[in-house]
Image (tube, rainbow, N blue to C red):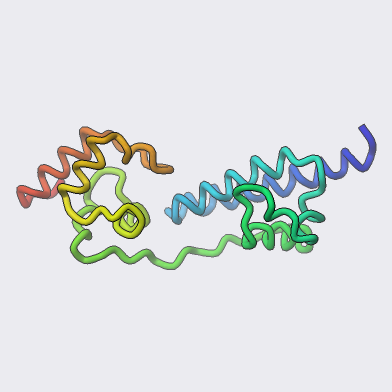
Length: 163
């Protein structure tokens, strides 16, 4: 392995470590789980690259890899220039008033409720129950609650009792 190859690998591993650090920091702040997942996926991809991620980002070629968008590519350049990237907080996620009680369900975060509403068009407890029973809720990133506990919570919400 040439000296250049070792340097490229070393730099890519540093960038990947920084992305993992950012993911951990964002996760500890209960940031959007999809954003945390994007940082983790970027770290895995960058660690496997045989070409310098910083140079790829500067040339605009890093975005050709699945999972690396313009924002993440800019962060790679920023890291190469400054040696560190600061995690920016997500703006607070607003939940539709009609779904605010869902935040009491196990494993439910504002980001998840917003995703269910905006992306999956889940609008009622009946819709939510159908999603849970289909076992699709558990496939969402970073959702770890037990289906039975969520179903029990839905039953309690329908009865007007806290889940």
